[in-house]
Length: 352
View 1 (cartoon, one colour):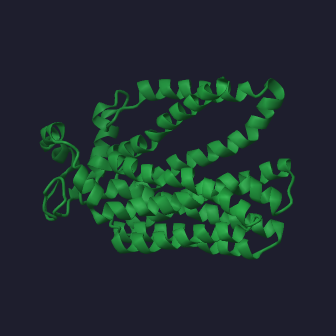
View 2 (tube, rainbow, N blue to C red):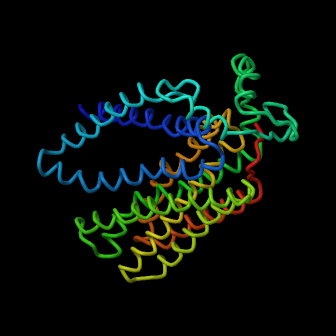
């Protein structure tokens, strides 16, 4: 039966995708200065949104012209092209990149500048807050330490700042997975669009997220340039990324006008992408050495809504005769929970 093969392929796809985001965060932590990380990560993650737009536009045309297997062959082939470019053109750090010029490498290392590490009982470095040194000097001095010392799992799994990220990440993705998975169904059953029209309108939220993510990233880095603290910037951007969607989902639940519902839903998902400059950028703030590990932990927790939240939504709709107000209400509750937890316990200071 081809079903087990299909399921295995899906599992392998998930394994491959699962390491992508931690790897991206670790790369940004190694390459990009703090004052540029918000817009860098926003630009990187917004590529996922634009990819969804292009996929929704191109896939129907490919299926019509060449049949459904062409979709898998086309996008799978692009993966090999990307792999070749990444394998031979990118280094894990400026020091290890084969194609970088000396002037560019010097600029990046100089831009990373000095680090101020706040001493904490869970700090992996033990540096005092007044200890300042260049990033290059710091990693030179601790290279043997990192090579011989295990990842401080206990600290990473117990610090309040890390759990603020974990919980916020979960709350972000609950709304993300549930709303985007069920969006075409909502357009069809509640707004009366036929499937072809629903497919077109399903693109609009992705476009909104692409635009808003990059706007948020530039705003965050502008505020950092104006000397607002990293902690305040992260909390501000994440608060927008929580309360904005909560507000507009509440409006969606109260309107019966199709065009307004599409507008409110797009605004909700668009503003949620401000999280790219909030919680998604926060891993590298609190632990640049372990940003990939931190994101791996939070991303694992944040994947749970994709498993249970989507199924729960289907159960609720079946049990309540398509009462979408309950679905939106649960998402709003998680957004509010995330707002409280993140503002109470998150920090932009380095603790690992």
